[in-house]
Structures are given as C-alpha cells and as structure tokens.
Length: 124
Image (cartoon, rainbow, N blue to C red; front, side, top):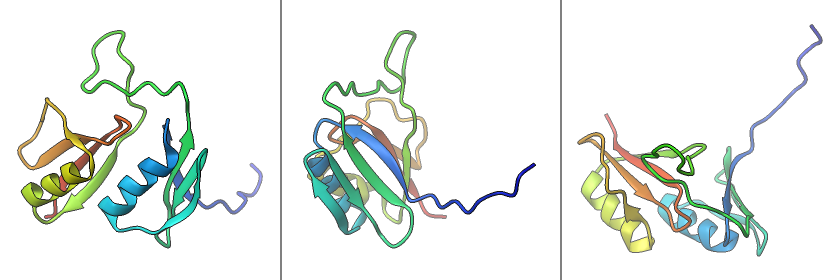
C-alpha cells in the first residue's frame, strides 16, 4: 500500500439555491465568520473544518423522514446546545422550521431555509 498523503477535511458542502443566504443563516446560528461570499459559493470558516454552500439551481429539499420515492437527505448537521427550547426559538427566528416528526425528547430536528435537516441536541 502506498504511503498515505497528508489530507485535511476543510468543510462539509451543502447545495442550495442561495449560497450567501444559507451562509448567513448558519453564520448567525453558529456564530461563525463568513469567509467567501459569492452568489455561487459561500463559506464559513471558524478556524477548523467549516461549512460551504454551493449553488444548485435545481436543488430539491430532502424529505424527513423520507418514505419510498422521496428525496432523501445525504447528511445532517448535529449542533449541541445547553437550552433546547431557547436554541430552537433562536433557530426559528433566523428562518429554520421545526420538523413535524421529532424522534427524541432531548433532540429537535429543524429544517434550514434550504430544507436541509439539522438537529439541536442537549449537552450532557
């Protein structure tokens, strides 16, 4: 086997019809600085791996939970919080929606403005 070259994960990339708008949403939610801010590409770089947002004009939001034939999510983000009620209200004030199905009492599944699911969960 060849020697493993150095590799560094820099970001998770989310497709969206509005990269700058989704970057602003997550920048406010996570208190992370915006790096690049262009109509087709935006980034958040908190000093470690961050998030990037790329233009996808034909973006179809995933359905959660998905049934047969539905657009399925490829990933979701987990965000640890100290106060689930306050964090949920804050996320909603930024444009997130609470998903109808909630599988656990100590987790809130929300949908970002592009429809990507993300979870708020209690520290502990």
